[in-house]
Length: 336
Image 1 (tube, one colour):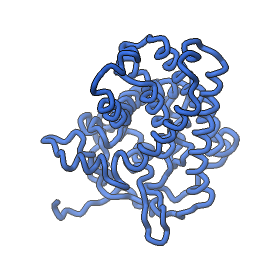
Image 2 (image 1 turned 180 degrees about the vertical axis):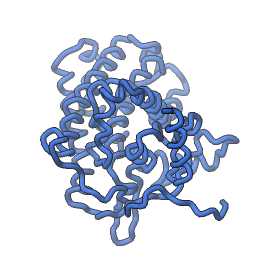
Image 3 (image 1 turned 90 degrees about the vertical axis):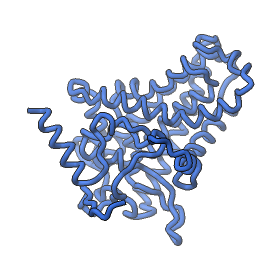
C-alpha cells in the first residue's frame, strides 16, 4: 500500500471507516485464501455472525411455524395468517431490539455512529417522527408483501409448480453439499438483484414517485431499512422468485426472504459496528458505510461490496474525497 494520504468525505465528526474496498468474491486473478478467510472469519466474515443468526431464526420458524405440505397445497387464510403473524413478530422484535439499544438506550453512545444527529421529527414525517413512519411502512407494507410472496411460493412448491419439483430435489446424491452452497450464495444473489432493482428505481420518473420515499431517510436508523413505497417493496422482495427456476428447498427461499428483510434493518442501523463488550471494546459488524454513502449522496453505491457492479458501471464511491469529486463531476457533465 502506498503512503498517499487518504482524505475522507465525512468531516462532521461521524464515524468513517477509511477507504472502502470490495470483498474478494469476484477478485481477478482469484484469491482463494482471502476468499475463505472472508467467508468463515469471525466476527468479520460473510457467514459469521449475521448469516448464521438469520438462518437460525429461519430454521426455528420453519420447524415450528410452517404448516404441513398437505395444507400448503391449498391456499387458505388459516395458514397464510400464521405466516403473516410469524413474519410480523420476527421483524418487530428484531428491529425493535436494534432501535432500542442504539437509539433509545444509546448503549454505545456515538461509537461507530455515522451521523451524530438524532433521528428526524416534524411534519414531514407521518405520525410526526421518522421512526413512526418507518415502522408503519415496514410492518404494514413490507410484511404483508413478504407474506404474500412467501405464501405463493409455498403453494407453488407444494403443488410442484416450479421448474424443479421438490420431489426431484432430494434425489441428487450431492443434495447436502448443494443445499449448504446455495445457502451461502443466497445473500449474494440477493445483492445482485438489489443492485438491478436499485438502478431501475433511480430512473427519475420512478424515483420521483416511488424511491424518494426511502431517501427521506438521509440519517438512517434500523426501521429505515424497509421504509419504502409499497411499489418498491413489490420489487425489492421479489428476489425470492429466483427459486422458481433455481433448484431449491422451501427453506432456501424462506431464508432469502427473511435475510432480505432483516438484513435491510441491520444494514440501516446507522452504526458501522455493534459493541458487544464495552470493557474490551469487542465489536461485530453492523451496518455498512458503503450503503450509508448512498443515502448521503444518492448517485453512488447502488449495490453491495460483495459484487463489483458499482465499480464496473462507474458508481462506486470508496469514501474518499478524490472519488467523491470524480463521481459528481461525471454526474454534472451527464446533466448538461
